[in-house]
Length: 344
Image (cartoon, rainbow, N blue to C red; front, side):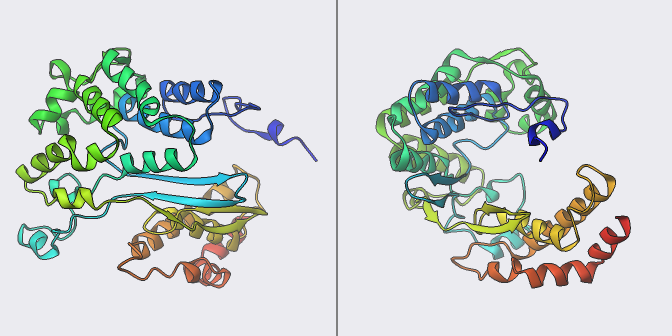
């Protein structure tokens, strides 16, 4: 059998390690997590520290104001667990009120789209369940980067510039994220003293400060002043939950994902569709294989948009959607299998 590493097709070499590895889209965050491992921390410690640092050095992505999910396999447990740190819609959310304001769906950039931020509770839950470092230690690297500043990396600088016009539409967003009225350039040092103070309060007082203290009240005041529904009672009642993951077998490998309301069902459906269409017979990276994957992902996303919801209030037929019979019927009804077969 050929060495799988020798068949790795990329312009970059794979990163190999024996005692742990951290992969992120931002090197400073990866380094923060790696330092935790080198100091004797475990994977949960490193994951939490990395996620919190990303909040600072990659501000365009989900941070303390968003959600968090984690798939965890702890060796001595022998099973995979799914931590759902997503927040629910505010209790006052009202579809009729949306329609009265002229919306036929949830607006993307509007206070009405704001749900309870679940990340902070999820970070704490993962750390207290599996971690070894303290909550204060977990927040320390992010606080340091926020106080002292960090050099903005090129890709993030480009994303920042693309969002500049939207940021200018909000006075506070412009003050924080457009220093001097402009998006930071690549290499420019960017500081966030306000975020550092917020994280320091959360570090000292615990995650309850974020959901019940000064930070909670500031979030509610801001959202409600702009017409949103978020209330202090929504924040106080939030809790992360541990769920049983969903999975499918693909080419001899069991692939785990988060159950709904997570979006992992989309990927698993796509894998089953690709298998039903004969993916694997064509060479990896070929036009035929790539075409099959694209069509499978299109159908997977279509099913995801149709079915994925909060299972607490909506029936999501996960077992049926992941059945081999469904993949075969779905593939045949759309011509995906014929397309893949003729291409091969």
